[in-house]
Image 1: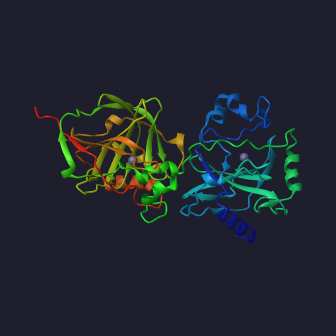
Image 2: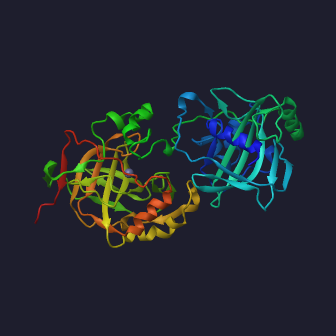
Image 3: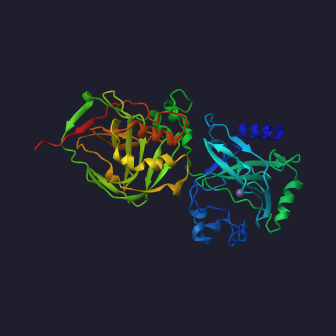
Length: 454
Ligand SMILES: [Zn+2]
Ligand SMILES: [Zn+2]
């Protein structure tokens, strides 16, 4: 790295909240359009920013997306972290075409490639650079003179944008890698575009509830480890002070045998699902409308939303931990949650995981949504035993919401070590566990349902 890149690199690392690495959950059809005259940046025009979502069916996310950019990087929403890996940059000289896209100037790099960055271990190739003036992102409401977007793409079509914000000051030698520019440099970029507008900055979008799942970790002695989850955010406080938290130890002497809970009825059906790497686990997310079917608990229907796995198991039985725990997460009409759990020890392969193996092996990346759509039949998940534990607990990840109805199938099943590893490796975080420590049972009752023998 030359001196300039080093300075830039230090700048990027030090001001990690200035430098936004936003991995857009990429719909594969996302591309910045060629003819940008179809939309404008003028507020009161009929094709202005507030109307973008209505201009074309395929642009609807501009209007109804809940994870839109840019946003304001407000101090009170920002959490300082030290556990992200360093942003590694490996760029090299490359032919590039300077292109006027109508609303901005773009430097598009040639096929031979201008190098790449690594985000969470995944390589993203640099496709193009362009500039927005004034800046699109703001920091505590403050807007800057210029914003550089370095647009990268990985092998699965997920995008990552690295951004540098500039204020007016000394000239920038690349027009890129230092943090001040002259007014004239900014003007140069605007004039070259020669549209009527004097801005190409989209208004700031709502932050909503975006949670970066790296915000919490499973490392016991880390500052964002399980013991601290409740302190990390006000809306996560139940993780710390809730009295009905999960997981728990299903201790024999606490368990009451009952026969009144009734058979677990499962009414699942094949459905499209998206295999998603959430940073701490792999999740199979089913379609919105309860397309994967439901289960009935105490007469209430709970639709199956998603499946994911923890290794080792989160729940223990008489202190014994298992190799893997499957969580089938359900929700009722009024928003109550029910999780049905299967515990696995090492042994013969699990046939349901067997169906997913090649998909998991293919995933080396975080957010490659659409490419990982698979047809899944949740009724193929073997349960075998009719006996189950039942207690009232919480989600085992932040925000640790309580009043979750837990059903833990009594009989453990088996998986191979390879199957467990596949689930861990696909996540590729630093941790080798995604099991929350055991929480106090407090005064809760734990029931074990066993049908009356006929
Ligand atoms: Zn841009
Ligand atoms: Zn879980």
